[in-house]
Image (tube, rainbow, N blue to C red; front, side, top):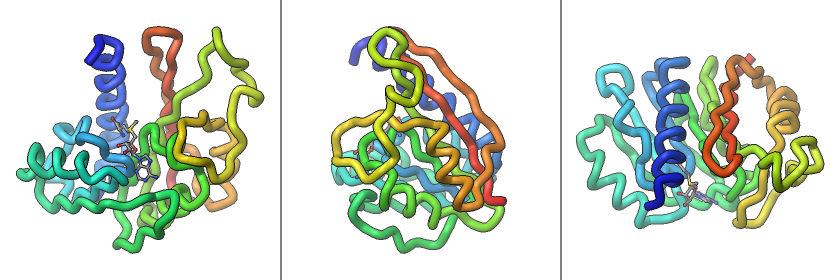
Length: 191
Ligand SMILES: C[S@@+](CC[C@H](N)C(=O)[O-])C[C@H]1O[C@@H](n2cnc3c(N)ncnc32)[C@H](O)[C@@H]1O
């Protein structure tokens, strides 16, 4: 792994910790859990149910072996862009760099449906680089169902889409990375 990748994982992990500190959830779902980056922040005394979802079964196997000690760990192999999630809701849904892969069609519906009443949805998006793309809306793909490649999502447009579903932005932060890369995290709460 390159040092830039290590740094990126570190930043994603810290953003996950911020989302946990914001909501202090008794239950949490991680969309696109990958290898379980940041799961060490979960305190089993506070969070008794941890739901991990990913399309890649090998990632889920890795999480199962690394984090079997986490209480209430449930892992589900699912394509969030194509299959409906039918699980009891949780107090915090965290989705970091997932919508860029899975689009904001059914994947966003799934995220919203997993959020319990008074729950929160934390979303991490990659922003366009100032060098390569416009920072304005033209740098983003439109919010629509996308194929499984990586397409940037406009935080402002996502915010508008979520407002229509009664989710209000309660917290946001930005983190810079090498090579002009930048992440944005928004935490939305159900109004
Ligand atoms: C960039 S990684 C996520 C990084 C991770 N959330 C973190 O904080 O380090 C994207 C993850 O989303 C998963 N993914 C991509 N498309 C998906 C889909 N349609 N349904 C479910 N998971 C998907 C990938 O397998 C991968 O594990």
